[in-house]
Image 1 (cartoon, protein in one colour):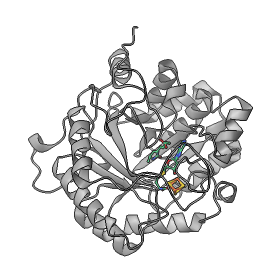
Image 2 (cartoon, helix red, strand yellow):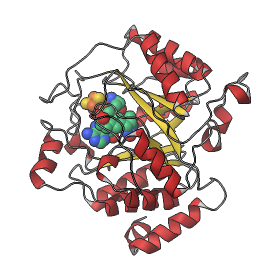
Image 3 (tube, helix red, strand yellow):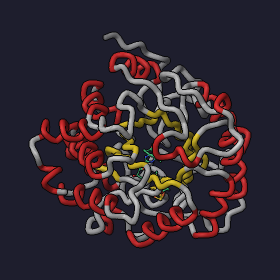
Image 4 (spheres, helix red, strand yellow):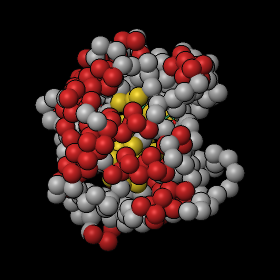
Length: 355
Ligand code: SAM
Ligand code: DTB
Ligand code: SF4
């Protein structure tokens, strides 16, 4: 793994690009996924990068869980804008015995009936809860290992790597596809980056989806403040190495270029797509932080000759809900303008990009 990761950058890119074109994926396809924070802030965990932990004083104010109808509305708009996967996140340590879990099961059922892949990220999950999500029709569960097992205790002390692995095993056992990746820029070494990819690639089965995030520095969090003080964040070269290595060692996984795109030029993102990233989050907002505008992503797709990916193809083909006809499935169009999901935007109106 270290040999692959450390080879000269363009050799690594070429090798990864070759694997990406070896038949499993259409290299022109990039899936558009939409994130929605359905329960924001007040989280009991202390992940040192996170705006939503109640351990840190950040600009994020805890808000109650969104209503089912509001979430379905947002999902409909995401579908119209070309998204084929809808991911709902809660700032929870885990699901626990909360009543709101029942509402989430309804959201999953309804969004699934819209013909989109559904994903949840709700923290720790037991076997029973995983089965309930599966029965509701959930396609994927996102639960990141974030970094190597050695570095993990420096990032969060309220839970262990073993806790995370147990949830991943429960998700897998329930027949839900696994979305598990990590984050760069959290005071890790290159050995930690390789260690994360090694852990992911040696799980009993590869995760179907591997998000690679670059730290979005949040003022008030230990790791965000550290990056702000240093005055430099994750470089495009760092992202390229992790994405390319992930593509080579997990050739059939979707590799998701996730948080941090605001800081990467379109040229840098083009290299990341070239070497195997095949999904992005589209929409003005990730969970609590800004994301590129639809018009910018639409322009990027056009310039690079990229197209959206159909839901339930490739690693999720076997999870297509029974009874959903082809015409009911979300149709991937290039990123189209979408009204803000929560009645707000990340700043000024749409900005056209000239090439
Ligand atoms: N509470 C759930 C959990 O921890 O699994 C779900 C939400 S959590 C925000 C999902 C992932 O987002 C984290 O594991 C981390 O990799 C990523 N993330 C969180 N804050 C981030 C930040 N400031 N910059 C980049 N990625 C971040
Ligand atoms: C993942 O790996 N990245 C997404 C998704 N899974 C849930 C979350 C990114 C969060 C970025 C920081 C924020 O917006 O709060
Ligand atoms: Fe909570 Fe998830 Fe943020 Fe950790 S990353 S503090 S578990 S919301």
